[in-house]
Amino acid sequence: MIMIHVAIRNESARKGFFRRDVLMRIAARACAQEDRAYPGTEVSLLFCDDPFIARLNRQYRNRRSATDVLSFAQDHASFHGAHVLGDVVISLETVERYCGGDKEAMRREVRLLFCHGLLHLLGHDHATAEGKAAMIAKQAQYLGVQPGQAWRDRSGVSARRAKEPAGGGASKTREK
Image 1: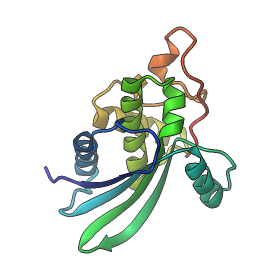
Image 2: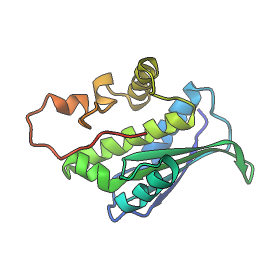
Image 3: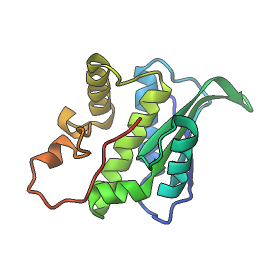
Image 4: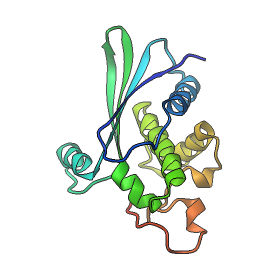
């Protein structure tokens, strides 16, 4: 399997919520299954906090709030011979709020958001029921989880956590 390079930069105050090798495996699995695994393929991943992602969300989507993940595709872009899929930006502050500070839950959420952003870079969308169902199935496949663990419902709570007693961290609706 061709490895996909994930260029990671963490500008967040939160540290230690991802493993580069795990994210690279997710990227390689998704790109291979989507027939987009080329030698030298690269994805940029930026971890930030809410003020930064809120500025991006306002600038590019005209939304005046922070969100969990944004994706910026780079159609047909190349840089020093690498095929650049695009950029994924994740707010670790929002992840922390979703997960109530639970570090393992935050690691799982980062993997989910990265996979979600990557699927957008690969051309998938969830604007329709069919598109959403396809993205849920692909995220579950690429993350190696059950479909109920591969998506957040409209309240911002994953299907798995929705069955747990109330009292988890505050969440908001995922916006893409």
